[in-house]
Image 1 (cartoon, rainbow, N blue to C red):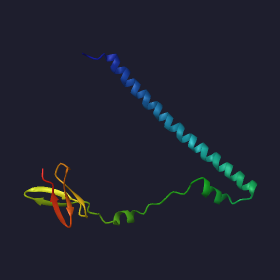
Image 2 (cartoon, rainbow, N blue to C red):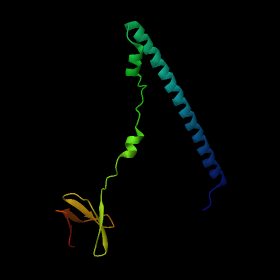
Image 3 (cartoon, helix red, strand yellow):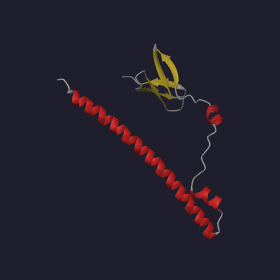
Image 4 (tube, rainbow, N blue to C red):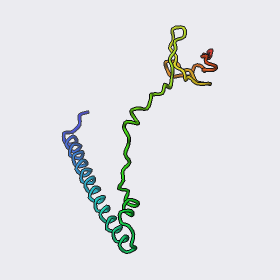
Length: 125
């Protein structure tokens, strides 16, 4: 069955309208965030003046203007931890957790054995 040309046009125009509405909603959200931040700032200034408090301390405490800095060097320097080791038994590849009571997996990620006392034990089917 062939779709009507008018249905295709309606879908296209509806999508375009939806995109426009989403764009305006994003702009309105940004505007209100800016207005809210300004109102909070004014309120803190009034409180600091009226209660004879340090305005900077109040801003730091209640406006959350500080942003956390991530140290990229720390993230990049962390050593990669080996989660699984690979072994080949009778021509079949297995991966195992190199820890006591670790699980042994086959190529399909099924548990097929255990790793105990530094030895791999494969379950018999």
